[in-house]
Length: 568
Image (cartoon, rainbow, N blue to C red; front, side, top):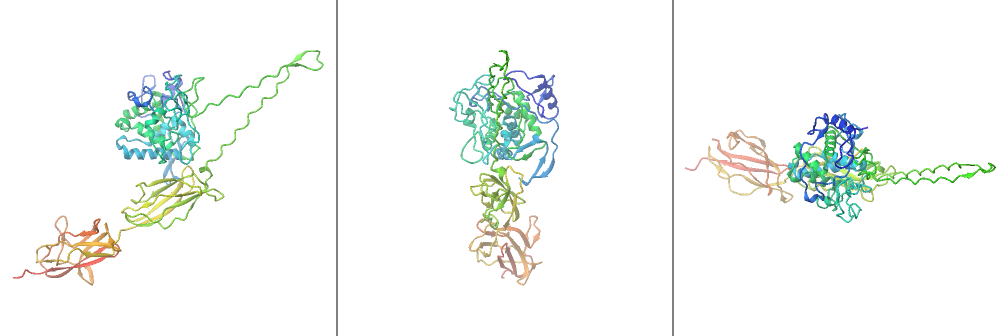
């Protein structure tokens, strides 16, 4: 079992066992954390001052609610790489504690990607979100979330009524936490309602900001940690961000320990199968339940049966045996989630995936999630990933898209948009939350083409021996009558109309060093289909010479160049 330590109550001292566990961990797993002479861990930076918007005096995002104190194994996962059939990428297989439910892990990585784009200076690692998610809710109770990332039941902390915790009177009329008297921390990242009101984000694009949705909560947590222009690659600033999230040195140490553990190796596990923590900082008798474990009412005791005299015993009495206490009915098994019923993916009439560079593909990738009985399964998250050496993207510029299956079990990826790089790449479809084989589709990007080339001027191109041509050659390319922009072309001074080999005399171009060259490659028409060649020069040879220009798609144009002595 993982080592653990506890915080008895807000402001109370930790136990001796806690100090020993922390001291052992500090030597191997908590970067940026120092220890005092007794081996206790101490924060690397002072807690930042309270923010008036947090809803509590220095209470941070969670109102200093309870958290899980389980620590990762002292032994590093040191995982061996293997190919994941879910994502198609190399992942790590290690300790059970290193496993993160697929949808939860996807939420953390998407939040990191969004912050990398919107706040690149923050340098938020997704492993920090995973560490906080582990400590706050056990990764959304081991990944008990639906296809959209919403927990199957709310994750609520205890009432913040001042009894061992911060005192925060109700701020949301119970809208988020269902409590009209006091606030309670809500969701996988345990936001108090007053903080969520301004910090909440829509991480899954459904138009709602739901603290019980792991995509929304992870993105909100990322933005919360990145406030005040923090750079989380600086240890002192990361420590300050964590302390601002929950004002506890023990909390900081626990989060940093999981952060280091996840950095050394983690892997994806199916939703609902994550390892649940078992120890909470709210560990004193009579306290409220831990953040992710609702209180279970005790069963009423069975009253004893009054004694009565035995027949024929002369009035003597002895207690009548108590009837056996009825056993509690076994809890009904939890029904499988839609994702857990998926057996495989089938193609759903995906068309031929071809496109010209810079244009949208005419067909979209479509798959169907099916059960063992080959029936479509609705409300399943399907991830589409672009793999290979390509600059093609889905609409919106992303290389990964997640789509929820409809009532027929079908999920259709967003439209593919070709980049400028020609060639083949792969689109892989996998089920989020299941270790199932995916479907691969080959997509092909063909180069931009032109079928016609014309000069933009009919001026004769003439020059005297040893001189330079007054006019530069300018051409315009079209394809099926439309402008052919960004089309590759080559230009060569050839020997004759029947011999397209490079001429060794006559007109020539100059390279960057001023040297003579008679073939130009890597030419490209501009957005208007226009191609303007560099200046031409003439050597001492006279006569009529030919310049031939070719484009991708087969357009060819031959231009005459005349070199003659000047008239006397």
